[in-house]
Length: 332
Image 1: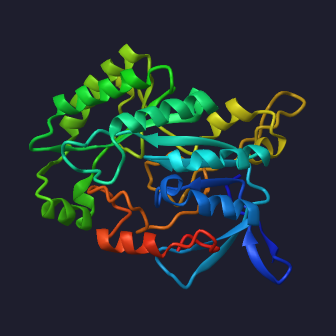
Image 2: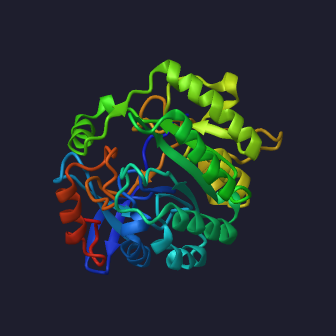
């Protein structure tokens, strides 16, 4: 059985109007923007309201209402989730589960992530978060891996090892992907304007880098996995990841009846489960994620990472962020 879309029902808003809304079980917050860093207050307000408005990034006239009544899991994606931490109690009080895909890169010297806090501060945030919610719920990403004329594979590996040593005991996995600059014209132009001479990750470079990275992972006792990569690195002990991960949800929250029912993890009298096919067909072919409803919006992330495909111009992202109203139904 394949996933056929989130249930739709009428939703009464503030006793004033009725709209058609979807009722998802899993939220992604968000692949499109750093919601924890920039829109944490908005997210808290939408939790209290019980719904939010999502706008199609490719068609601003297509507006979708998202009811939060049935949400059981939120997957947060962030490079700086510190602003969200005061709001986690609101999720706990509602019995909503969550975990973090937390990216900690080190491109400070290259200026590729110009508006992020220092690496040392982000590492401390990571450690504090893991101590609060548990290491399995804070997954480390070094993503994407990017080479330049001045940033060699050796330097990049040294940085990953250093961060890994700082995070040891505070995470259970390292996820990475290789920067695919050639695929995105706006990214190529942005890097050219910044005079960043990026170096393409050929297949040979990928295999060589992954082989050396796997040695670091073994030394740290940290499993490695790729995100949405078509290259098969299983011979190096590196799996293809599932970032919206039903197996992780089952391990962590097997007593949540509603969640297990959605995931098809309800053993029958013979101990068998009827697991539906939940792969998210809206993602790239190599992506292993199960379905979720992403509630972010492109061109709103004020980190201004130079390799980011989710932003257009820096001016547009800043302008959109400044237009944001945390009391509004939608991010923008």
